[in-house]
Length: 193
Image (cartoon, rainbow, N blue to C red; front, side):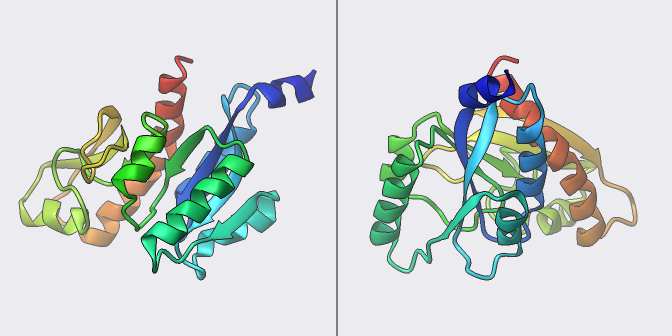
């Protein structure tokens, strides 16, 4: 029976550029019986991304695209995704901006996690900017990806209190813990589970 449920899971790819801590938590989530996803592919824009090791550990196919030529990389990427029958994409610390064309092709099928309470602090240096503005709260957001940076429909958010002596490092660490919980919850939500 277990193999049957495996067949019913939605084939997904996770895109990373760095440590892959959200990737690791998504892989663990994908392994539980009630998870609606199976991770078939890890895509990285960085050959040295530490997160690539999870491909080896969990026996998941991995591919690196350097994006030096965005068109060529994206075309190769699309054919790789097709070949592996990927139906959904999860961006997890992926530091490249995908083209409008690519996003249109996977409309409503790409999710991203961002370390701020969107629409605040789109883009980079979110923790620094939150601290500079003396925010009382920061947090993380899982949203659909559209052609505008960090502007797609919000699925779920989690608030985190910013303490008086907070640093970028402590805030980042605190938010990351929440990201690992929020991403799976957001996936369950879009699958109506």
